Structure formats: structure tokens, C-alpha cells
Image (cartoon, rainbow, N blue to C red; front, side, top):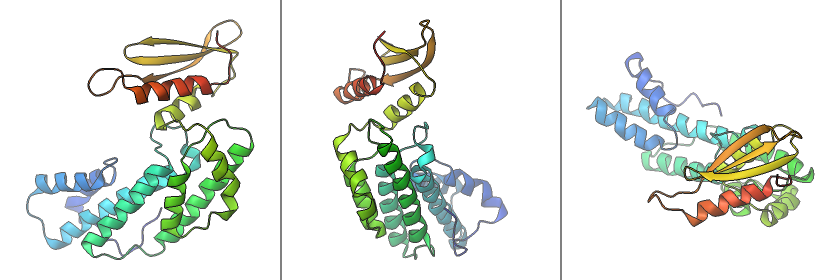
Length: 238
């Protein structure tokens, strides 16, 4: 996602601070508040330039999750997160009374269309799991004004297939990276470890999925996700 020139650039003494906000991760507005707490009093122009960094951060997140090539990467969060971040960006702009960057909705709409084209191709090729729930796809498409008619069959497939979370998608990508003949599992350190093996029983790839929640006990939803991934690895048990 490129930025429209109307977004204010920061003066040299704030460039590092703006970069920290822009690359802060999943909560750009929290990063802005932390930055302002650290900086103390800033001028209106300086404040606006840091607010611009928040917008750039949201665009980075949107670009990450709308790029189908990132599917299975550890940093990928998927279309549900993209929808959430689009709404958060809108709320941020509304609170400031700022206009949307010129052409941004069209860019994001095109990126979603490319993502759905790639997703439809993967499903048609026989992939055995979904990567997004249809409600998230529909919500984001409606927010962007994208007609989903060309992807109706893909949405039907998404609705009937199991949906791993982003950790599960990353684990599946790792486990399916190299040809293997069998799979095995073990539980240790509060995780389900899955390995794929070659014909001689040597480990080809491995991935782990958490089983324990914040309280330290086993979390049913994490157990369900881990068991789903185990079942989706299309190999016989060793």
C-alpha cells in the first residue's frame, strides 16, 4: 500500500520515533500513545506527523494480510485481521476528522480481489483447509464495496472446510514444505509437536502448537486447533 502525498512527513528529529510507530506491530495507536508519553509536549505539526505514522502502520498491516503470498508465514494474520484493521483505520481517521488517503479504498479493494483469486485457485487445486471465514471476507468486501460474485464458489468452499488459526496455517506451511511419507506426534512442554518423516524414518520437518492458555492449564480451543492441524497433515501416522 503506497501513501498519498497528503500524509504529513516528520522532521528529522522525529523520523526514528515515526518509524517505531510505523513498525510497532498490531496496535499502532497504542504505540502512538507510548511515543507521546515518552516525548512529552509536541507541536500540532509534530503530532500530525506521528499520526501519519499510525496510518502508515495500518497500511503495512493491511498489505501484509492481503498478500496471499504471505499465507503460512509467522507474521501473517489473515483476512479477519485485515477487516479489523480496515475498521480501526477508519475509526482513527474519523476521530481526527481526516479524509481517507486518496485512492486507498481502490488499492485495498484490488488487493483483496487478488487475494481471493489466489485463494480460489488454491481451493480448486484441492487444498484441504480454509484460510479465512466467509463472514470476514464478506465484511471486508462490503466495507470496500467489492462485489463477491466472482468468488461465490470459493466462499462456499471456505464455509465447509476446517479453518486453522494463523498459528495452524504457519504450522501446516512448515510441515508441507518438503515431501514426506509419514507423520508422528508427541506432547511436551505444553505443546503438541508434529513431525513429518521420510521413508527411512528421518525427520523432514516439524512444527509445534501451544496447548496451554494464559492460566497455565490446557485451553480447549488451543487443543482443538492443534488436533485440527494434526488431522490436516495428509500423511499416515508413523
